[in-house]
Image (cartoon, rainbow, N blue to C red; front, side, top):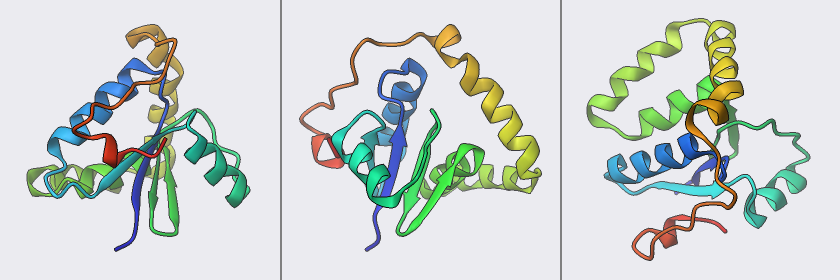
Length: 130
């Protein structure tokens, strides 16, 4: 089975809340997680020669998705009624990504920032790459 890994900003309160949401709603428990600040993410970035922005990313096997496409792909993985949100992919990528970047630019101001990355609970630690 190919890896499905969500890369997220580990000090962003909004991002950490979304990870908690995903953990709760990923009934198949296929999603794995790594903060952008983790050794795993830093090594993956270096090995693949990719320059990442401060954003959420989704690694699906050998494909990397970013910005709004990453969010839509992640939501699609939740299955059931959540898949309906994938219809938003019909909106042109340039418009979706513009809205995504505006939100991302203001997320610390709106939701705050932690000094340290979230520490996963023992129940879900096996779903995180540290």
